[in-house]
Length: 213
Length: 314
Image: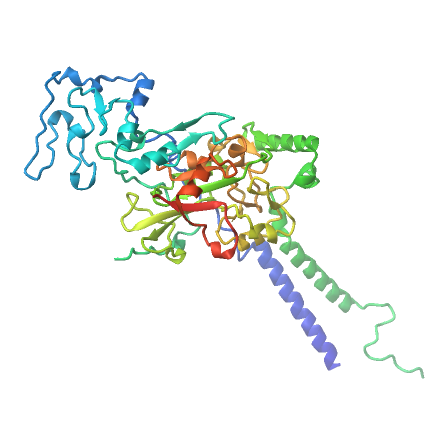
């Protein structure tokens, strides 16, 4: 008798629980799916594969205006321009060449224009071993000081090689030193990084780690 | 006088009104609860076609069947994006084993590789799935606990840090392949571990097994803007994925098995990324592994033996 009433109570309770659960599920009272936030698309400039500089070789190939490289439009032949230095022994870049920022080598020590340019013929370059090199042929000039880097570059290891890894299927292109390095200031310039991964929830970023002092 | 029936015996008719009502209420409640819990099924959008549902395992497909499958994928992509893609099934080449080498001295942390990869491989933009994660770590140690991949300074590289891009390491001994219960992921002869997106059941065991956080799960339907879709596709590569399947870096099979360099390498402004055939002694990667200070395979103590090498200059 008592047992029967107990069963009935349990059954009624279960029914109520099931129906309540059903209503909650139906109305999605919890675990409502969060709408996906549309993320901004990345700037196509970050997908660009071209190098950030154009070399003289590229300009010749593109048949661009080369009047900037006509040294004897302003300079006189057989009268090499004099170099001027300030009291800190830093090169004074003349106004006409104000686009040149000198920064080759630590502490500005490589600050003699004729270390690389030919004093007697400004249209060509002078390597350390006395070879005269054309302006578009600057790689051996760089290599005359930067031996290990030149060796790596020749092996395809320094600098990017793009195109086909399988040379039987297509061509591959090497970049020249000056496609990535400004010869007057060869240190790789800093740049803005592409956007960081966007976390699902804004607070989910990891705390930044400070570098060791 | 006949004995009275026991008190709790059912009446002659089998069921009285009260117990009938009670049973019906319980039954109706139970059915309603079950229907409600199954309600999410009604919101299912991607109902597989019979053709896809009955499709055989990748390794069992004959060339003719493969052609039909590729035609189906092209049709489905065109339906969804309005662009006719070119889907191929590229096989590994003989005498080729791919290896990646990354120069930690050169990497400037610009993240261009991350986004070139997303564009090439049709990864979801919202929410984001990215195969490459660029870790920024303080100089002086290689402690992944101290790594941060959410850095966003005005200019990189920053003083006091170095950058280490991590993606699928294409292990020689891949833990992800071991745990897959349905063999939807396997290692091919050229060293690339691939996924058959039509065979994956989305259990995410491989994600848990991978020590490099290289595998990513499509929790929602991936969203790729139509104008950014890359129509050059491969079955095991960058064809659009569905909700509920895994994906990861596959060394751009649609490019590398056609002889080209992967997209992350092509976009690197520092020339830090090198890729090639390790079985060719004249390849760039062979030269690097022979002559450079190749210092790690990431987490090499785990015995996964990655095909992805980090090296330094000099």
